[in-house]
Amino acid sequence: MNVILQSLGNLRDLPMPTFNKIAIIVINFVAVSLVLTVLNHNKLKDRKSQIFVLMGISMLGWVDFAYLARIFGRMPEISIIFLKIAWLSTPFVFFFTYMTSTLLAREGKQNKIITISLLVVAIILGIATAFTNLTIAGIKYTNGILDIVYGNGFFPYLGGVFIMMFFTLAPLVRTKIQSKSKFFLIGVIIFYIMNLAFNITLPVFFHITNLYFLGDYSTIFLLGFTMYAILRHELFEIKVFATEALTLILWSILFIKIFFSQNLTQISIDSFVFALTIVFGILLIRSVRNEIKQREKLEELNKKIEELDKRKDEFLNVAAHELRAPMTAIKGYLSMLSEGDAGKLTPTQTDFLNEATNGNDRLIRLVNNMLNISRIEEGRMTYEMGDINLSEIVKIVHDDYLHEAKEKNLVLNLEVPRDVKDKVYVDKDRIFEVVSNLLSNAIKYTDKGSINIKLRNQDQKIIVEVEDTGPGISESDQQKLFQKFYRTESAVGKAKGTGLGLYVSRLLVEKFRGEIGVKSQTGQGSTFWFKLPLKS
Ligand code: ADP
Image 1: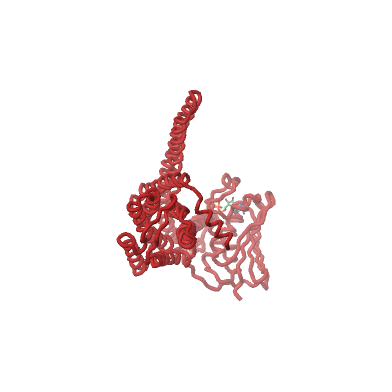
Image 2: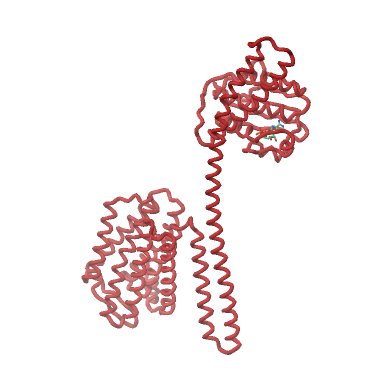
């Protein structure tokens, strides 16, 4: 213990004036720039930036006047005034830190009573410090070290500060820490720890008062991290600020260096370097600004594109909707005609009618896919769920496509094992569309051979496979087939399509807690399959 006390005692004699001087200049520079950046960005429009500016001002009041008090240590009557201003500012730094904490961690939801009480505490502490001798009773200045004689109100003053600290940390700890409050929390913790160590523990309990400034200066961490938390999403603002500040510092250093040059050669080299940095500095700042301008433009364009995209979707949706009703009517009439409701048909007439039916079905499928996509993506889709026998649906789709397959000279088979379990809980029309998409693709992309539809059970599931003897699909394409608008290159040239069918099918099957996929090799045909859980 003695050793610790002794080494702490040695700390007391540590001369730090030069560091202190440089530090105070840097801190002022950084603090003012941070405040100006926030001001420049938000023009005090929101609460966060207002509080931030107040926090910066009270922090500078604290740090600068504490520094001045030491400088004027030899003139106690002036020094004590500066010290009191510093101590008056302190509670407000803690109060504004509390305000920022509620803004960041609780989205501004403050408990009014707590806020007003803490403000009252800060004001009372400020007034008591400024106009009475309760907190600071006097000062002693010996050998360049300023010691504060604390008054009776010192511990209540500390108590007040601790209460503010508590309410600052409380919302941060209680809420799930998001990244924006995380940065703020880091700043607060550094600030609190350094304050407790250098402003309270060392001076009050060990009489080491010459390290106070480390506590004071830790406010800069608080300010820096807070600004980062506030402007994190506008990082480029920070980027411009950092570039400009660093360039300015560099210029100043190089400029001053010229005056310390020893001889003419040195002067010319230093001037040359200075001139070069001026040129490159300007170029750098310009390029950063340009980048920001471009980014802003890009953002604007992006917004426009999003807007246009939305309108396009709306248009497609309305168009698809309007198309569907007449097409369904056409389907009805075509079917009545082919069933002979309007008189017996010649074989040629039947052929023509079948062609018309196929074309119309393709259109209906396309329109359905388009409508489904927009509904699913916008969350407007409603499902009419019910228990159905999947094999019945597959059978209907199979029959629907018999004619189209025959036209292409393809053999279309359906294999449903007698004992297959096929009860599933789905929306009948939607699952009809899925089977229909797979089968129509198989026919569309297969030039010769056959298409087999198979049903089988596996674990508590039913699998539907549509196997074709078409061109097959490469591994890399297989990965992407179920994405929106994706079409293989060979398909683009060969058959018309939109790249929507498989995507919608995937969304629907997944909605019914199933899976969809493909097995294939180039040149060996493809088997598209989907599985659904069986209704027990
Ligand atoms: P579309 O058929 O309208 O292009 P789909 O989403 O139904 O859209 O299919 C996406 C792509 O998958 C098709 O463009 C085609 O390249 C490929 N494809 C689908 N089914 C088959 C198949 N049976 N054989 C070969 N390629 C297929």
